[in-house]
Length: 158
Image (spheres, rainbow, N blue to C red):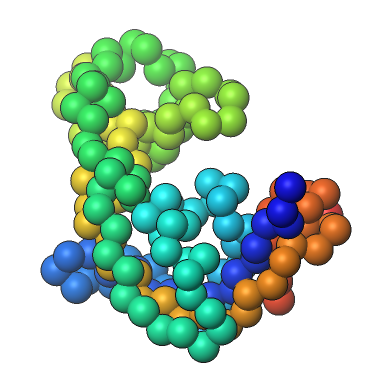
């Protein structure tokens, strides 16, 4: 079994219209252990072919990003399904189940006794444009292997 690769890279993420969504500019690079599902598939598939110092724009389709919009995750829920003392607000997020990977729902609209929620990722259906600059590429170390994720400057403590 081969040791997973860790890559540290700066990125700027934009949508197809060029609107910036996120960026590591001015901060630490993002460190990921490739092939572990920590980043979208479309990015995880291309990064292994890049080396330190490489710069590239990677376009990721919704299918290889956060998926297409799933209309079945857009629901109208009676207000009575929420705790009576809940101060519901548009934009509020919650999970219906406490297990990892359970969908996160966002309250999109509140009308009288109806609450409209959406369980799609906010970037579902969006073509992602990543401007990438690779800063580091190396085998994962023992601590990273034990923790199951990459560490880099500014990484958390365990």
